[in-house]
Amino acid sequence: VIGIGMDYAEAEFPPERFWKAYRMAAAAGLHLTAHQSEDAPPRNIETCLDLLGCERVDHGYHVVESTEIMTRCRDEGVVFTCTPVSTAWVYFDDDFANHPLGRMREFGLKISLDCDDPPMFKTDPTKDYIVAAEHLGFTVNDFRDCMINGIDGSWLDESTKREMRLEWTREFDELATLCRAPVGLQRVDRDARLYLSFCGLLWHIAGSGQPVIIAGLLSALLDFFFDRAHEF
Image 1 (cartoon, rainbow, N blue to C red):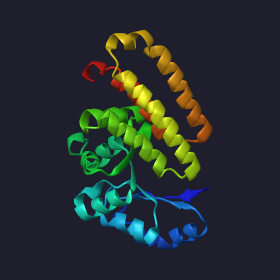
Image 2 (spheres, helix red, strand yellow):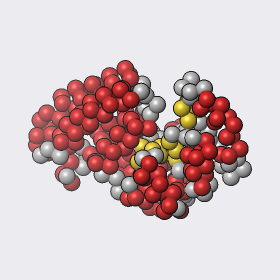
Image 3 (spheres, rainbow, N blue to C red):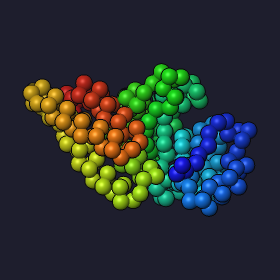
């Protein structure tokens, strides 16, 4: 065990009720995170940062209700782990147009993307990335940022993070360049190049325990951007 977190309905169980548990975990050297402001006001995020000592925020969508807290989170580089499909279904009337994630992206918050409870919500990382692109305005560069944010928000040691940033951004940029290549060129060599790149990236995932977010990113890039190569 390297860290703790919490989830469930916040309205009846605000984060301040668990400050002693988080102090004990911090004293034991554990990492700290929490599901907050998914269905509760943005002040819960401040409670998690100031009282519980959380290093990142899981979900946090209602942060958009406070420009002050959004500004603080942006300036401090707080990472938000977000799952657009499941939360749209549960909290935002399955309406992606009004999902706060788009405003969080526009404000410059550090977002990482993944899926939540795939069997329950009939989703997977690929679908969540496609939704982010088609309904929330995420671009290739945004997905690159999400990848880096996923590394930053992970609980890996700093040396490993530094190596992964270099390796993953290099391979991402190669893949993104290929996505933008002329369609004829893509037809000639994309299968071979993608196969090698994809296998190498999966090898990194298996060897380093990198969060599934990046596997989802790669899958989404394959499913989404190559089908729309003519748009770049």
